[in-house]
Length: 206
Image 1 (cartoon, rainbow, N blue to C red):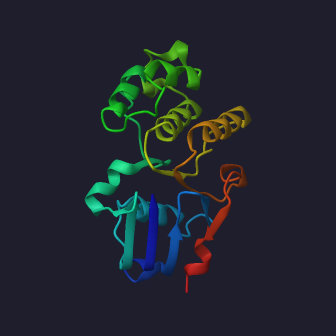
Image 2: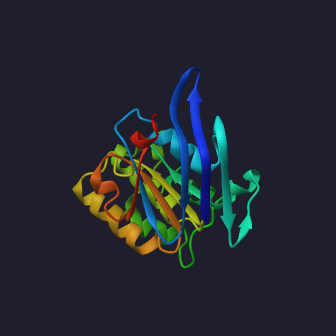
């Protein structure tokens, strides 16, 4: 997956969040979107997911040399963010099974194996609404990172994770994010320490 932005800008009412972004994201790299809270990182990630349209400019998505229609992009995206909610009435098993109806898991993974990766074997029949905030975040990350997609978007991935959870997240990235376009939005270094390319939203404020 490759994403190319040409003169991309986003405005809410009379305020430009960012403008004049010319950039190309390529699958052989891992990217971090940097900037202080409230500077537009999440908005930028939504544009990169195809869910939000730029106010100006053009964004194109290419997969295996073919340009995708914007309506096709969602099929290639796995996305985790604090503002994307889980269905809390589902049990853990139901949540994973439901997710797979839309996003299949990577080769070699199934519901039981994902629960083992989470370390939640004793919670298989527990409703998600009874999970702690850290458990919910782990589930979001596992469903996203372990999905079989070419584009992986993570917004503030270590939110609500303790040190053990952060170590678990890094291991999950190491094992299941290879050969994909990975883009992480955060101002916490632990979130993006595996990244080798950096885009600072503050550079596109003028």
